[in-house]
Image 1 (spheres, rainbow, N blue to C red):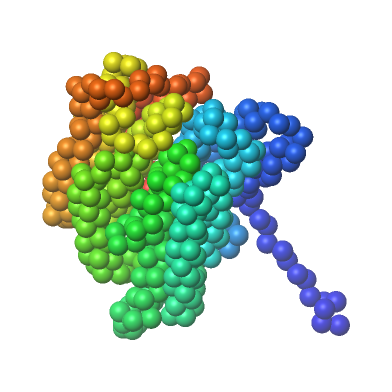
Image 2 (image 1 turned 90 degrees about the horizontal axis):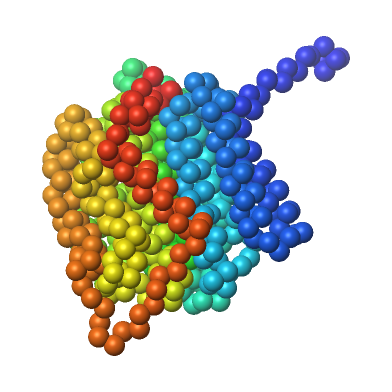
Length: 494
């Protein structure tokens, strides 16, 4: 009788919020099915790029729409849409620079492209996550695909070793994430970021202390897991070995896309869920940012392997990105977006040059391999010079605009000591970036060394051209990007 009189109302689901990650996941499955019927990997690459463009178009159609769905577990806002576009662009460039790399390295397997799409879809979920459960789903979706991509060069020993290290340490970090979520839920009874903020505000209003060890430990564990993904010191130990052992296009992809997605999750977590603990996490992460910037740049100076140098450089840039997160302000969020775009173009371009070298047999990635590159291949050396200047933050490149933006945001948030440390460490970084330029243009090859012309292909050239043009356009005329992001803030934090 009771069941007959009760009306069950199923709430409407707004699928537009999930459109971008869901579309990319479905498209990845489609590419995986097409792989069963064709041996032409260019077809798969072309389909993958079409899927990325279609996903980006969904973001254009939903531009200006700001809403949550699935019980506030996912959020769609302009901030997340811009980050999604950057991640989709990074994936497209990765496909371009890997198109001819894979067959030349004997890695002609069609699963590569679907795995990239699956990893990117996990990143889009992480960017739009408004709930700790969705943070976990996004992290694991991207991580599982990246574990496989890291070991994609098996049976090469270095690739298998990198995959095992990344898998074991990644599983350990996932344990921290789950345990941290459990502790936060145990204290607040919530997993949604908005609900957590409301619960903590209610505790403060009623005089209940939120300096509880359970809550602090839970937040700390979650941030440890995200710190692992972005290579913050002291959670960085995996980075040099994994970057060195993974196929170079995968290294390029991981160095930019994973950082971008994880930092957005960290930004939402801190500014939306835990503004009540701002004094605590701002101090702790300020110290970690300073140590990360200093350690990454100082250790990079001693590297003679170009790939490992870029790995330690990537660690340092995680510290710079954190300067856009710590202010927990509109200015900081906008600065983070500018820096993310600049770093994405620059690092992908630098790794594309490494791919051009590797295609011609320079597999050791020694800095000496760059000697005389300006004479052998002046256009490639010119592109690498642009990338090094941008990483160093030299005007008029995108790297300068990005660093200026995050330093300004930190200074405006009274984190002046941190901005000063960023400037000092940037001076240190200039040494090893400029060293690359000196080797290319001012040093000749060693006597008796084999002269091997660098191998470039149209897709690789397109990827390099997009990166160079993007860096110069953002550096010379940054107003368009700045105007786009200056009013783009976290919707849930309003």
